Structures are given as C-alpha cells and as structure tokens.
Amino acid sequence: MKPKEYLDNYFYSKIGKKNMQKLKNINLIEEGILDSLDIVTISVEIKKKFNVDIKLNNEKSMKIFQSYEKLLEKITK
Image (cartoon, rainbow, N blue to C red; front, side, top):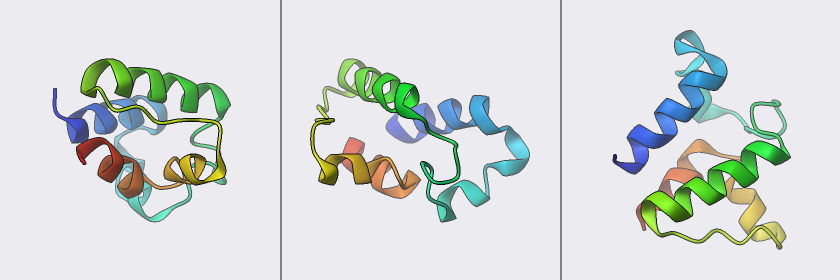
C-alpha cells in the first residue's frame, strides 16, 4: 500500500467520501478530524507500514498532523 492510499483510506473511514475534497485545505486537529488517539494510531501505523518514525514529543512533529499534505510529505520523504 502506498502512503497516499493509506491516508486516503484512513480519512475516508473517518469523514466519508463527500468530505475528502476539503480535507486538503483544513487543519485536521482544529476541525476535530484528528484527536490524540488518531495521532498515536496513525503514527504507529506509519512506522509499521512505511518505516517512518514520527516523534510525538515535540511541537514541530505535532504540526505535521495539522495538514494532510504535511503528513503525506513526511511519509513519502
């Protein structure tokens, strides 16, 4: 599974098909799409599937989860 496919599937299950378009233009945390459990879950899954470690102990890393594009960019680096 590719990173974009993983993220799309995850968010599709959370917000549904009709909201996927606006996903890329909003703050995922402020809009309530991602909560703390989602962040931990995604971080663990990304580590397992793509061998990318996102540290959750600093503000810079947490900002990655505010944006779909930033999250996808981090996974595909």
